[in-house]
Amino acid sequence: MSRHRLSALVLALALVCADDSARASNCSVTSTGMIPLTDLGTGSYQGFQGGLYAGGSNTRPEAHGRAGLSIANSIVPLDTLGGSDPHGRVVIISIGMSNTTQEFSTFVPKAVADPQKRAEVLPIDCAKGGQAASDIADPNAAYWDTVYTRLRGHGSAPLQPQVVWLKEALRQPSSGFPAATVTLQTYLGTIVRILKQKLPNVRLCYLTSRIYAGYASSNLNPEPYAYESGFAVKWLIDQQINGEPTLNYDPAIGPVEAPWLSWGPYLWADGLHARNDGLTWSCSDFQSDGTHPSTSGRNIVAESLLAFFRGEETAVPWYRVPVVAVAPATTASDLAVAPTLAHGRVEISFTARSPWRIEIVDLAGRRVRDVARGQGDGVLDRVTWDLHDQSGARVRSGAYWVRLDQDGRAAVRRVTVVGR
Image (cartoon, rainbow, N blue to C red):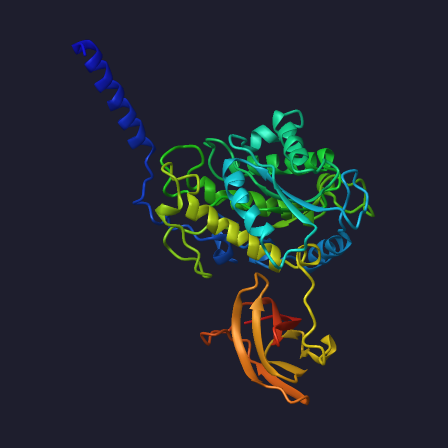
């Protein structure tokens, strides 16, 4: 090999190595000090209150929740022309960028194999790499042709989807907070309106903001922009809750411009600094750019989505196989809880004729407390839940399921905990 060619080869290899080094994750940034919105609560970030909803709350406003539940209860399988069909499908799709397609494509096989999912529910990944919020906020963008192609490739059509998981971000944001956040909020508002135009039977849209980006080695969407994207989602949902006409979902109020909006799983945690619910993000959960999730990172999101659709009250009616009553000799009315709006103790009464267990689970299906176990003898039993979890700490305010298990069957009753 000539000296010239050898020199050229060495130079090329050096450039490749330098490029790889530049793209390597910055694994030293294990925390930014920012507080997840769910933990921030009534505290503030640069003057803006935390929480997923107004008032620093992580609980959806009751009226908005009732509206979403009413829509959820009316969702039925559709054919490809959008008509009700008992042999049709309830199609749920992803909309968004590269992270979205990586995460949702990992969720799809988990959902398909989920024994708790109704057979008619069909998840389809319609997100695509390289499609930032500004790209798909154009109704004439080629992205929407991709969505149609993906649907048809799965035997579906634009009139069949009814549920969307939307996750988007800005490409190389630079205008700071809150300017960049407002820009993303505006794009998201445009996108949900396009959804209603392109996919007119979409009725529910769950939004998720970015995962941790402290390990990012590029300016694609680093911190604090990834964290701040949570405010864009929050503010958009608040807009709809406050009656913004361009986001109206209720035909009784006026022209329908958008689907009903609510939070999907909130996934940002401060690196290795655990959230109150234990979520962390390690460097190994990301690819070499520190931005896109690795296999383990994709699984974290996919499992979060699975838990969300199993437990979210506006998803249970159309996603979950109905809960079977507790044993042939025990009807659903045999399980009762009082009060259903609890400040202190909850009294649980039931009748069982075989070994039984009472437990408390949250809306994501996670066990909170193993309350009691016993052997049923066909007479009325009573146990008490003191509103504490398995560790002995009082649970947070919010909704929980009281679950009675017996002979491999279950019955549930909902209780809402208020106050601390």
